[in-house]
Image (tube, rainbow, N blue to C red; front, side):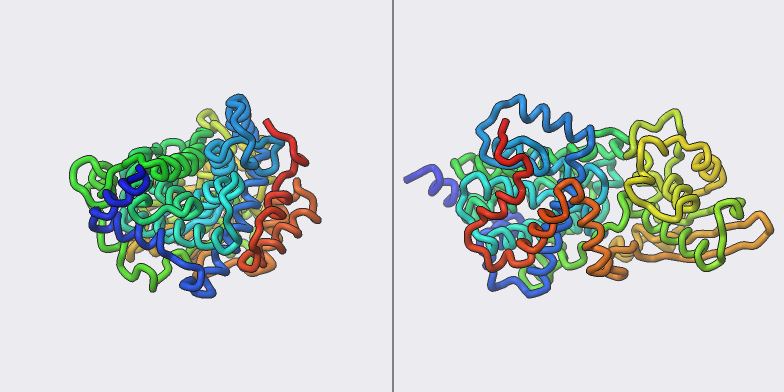
Amino acid sequence: MSSTERISDKGASATGSTALLAEFCASLRFDQLPTEVVAKAKASIVDTLGCCVFGASLASVGKVAAMAAAENAAPVATVFSLPLRTSAALAALVNGTSAHAFQFDEIHIESTLHPGSLALPAAFALAEAGHAVSGRDLIVAMAAASEIGIRIGLAARGGMFKSGFHNQGTTGVFVAAAAAARILRLDAGQTTHAFGIAGSQAAGLMAVQNGAMTKSFHCGRAAQGGVYAAQLAQLGYTGIADVLDGSYGTFFSAFLDDWSAPAMCEGLSSHWHMLRTGFKPAPAANGSITGMTAIDTIMREQGLSAADIERITAYVSDNTLHHCGWPYEPDRVQSVLTAQMSLRYGLAVMALDRTAGPAQFNEARLRDPNIMAIIDRIAIEHEPRFEGENGRYRVACRLVVECKGGARHETSVLYRKGSPEDPMSTDELSQKYERLMARSGRGRSRQIAQYISQLDHVGDLGELWRLLKFDDGASA
């Protein structure tokens, strides 16, 4: 009996949520996917590739890529937009880091997870590295991985963040492991062990939100860890068989005091939580984006300029208060990420520029005196009515603007632009993608988008790998 057969026997004995999610991952077929799930998976791929390409231009990602290049690993997988081909695990590391590097990647609000930037790097790296898969296989991997990760995130009920952990690095390993397991065609028993191996690698401290480069590295390491987990499980390596169910030292019991086990498997295969994943219109924290929408609404409707504003008060959830409501202090600014994670900065720069894109979240603007002058007039307060409802109003904002002439204006934005309740239009998503893919050239970017739109009709993915090799075959 082979080691692979033995691990399958051991995995089959596992019970509970771990085993049920592993069975879902291993047995899911393309013809079981609702049409809207297929469309969401394709949109996720396009958006995530754009985030990867733009993220690869950042200095922080360049450092991770340089480290990967120095390993001189077998050049079997592409690092998008960089002249580097490396091992599947290292490609997943760099691409996962670049996908999350500019805070522009999709998000499922209630689970506080960016599934695409975890699933795609793992799935694409292994698929390109020689595992014969079709376009439909990629779509199933993206759908299964996203759904599994989101369900685990929902079970945490926001507790990871409250405990000071970053979901992208903790819950994220299961997304990547699921995607990798699908590409490697692991059975349910092997997938159970892949989850158990991945869970042991879960890590990520949320203090990175203050500006450390490490925030996006959490995503890259989770993607890499998922690849390792699936590869090891394929070889017969064992993990914690009940990693999502056990008591002492398992995933939930180690990270949290309270969680909802039923959330992981209720409606599995019939209810798709991934459909509530939304795309981001600005490269900033979600609570900041909602606040920026609120200030823009008031200023546009009332015909205000930044010079008219005396004071701004934002009333937000406890999550937003801790995630991006902290003081923005010039001497503590580490990087552009500090501004991206700051509600105060977002409100100030939107009041001044009336837009929020790469030009607003730029090194040259981090200590801009005009921005700092508005930040000094901003207060952030807790709004109790935004709590509960399973995190539905986690990024909501009630904004009050007091003007120098004495006028007072107020508005509430309950949902972030790009969320399921206020989705970005097809044109808005296309424009975002083209901006992010500018380095690739309009011709190539449109070819990639067109290819993904037909992905479920593609058997051989060779053309996709050619389009993603911006270096014309160079390797390191």
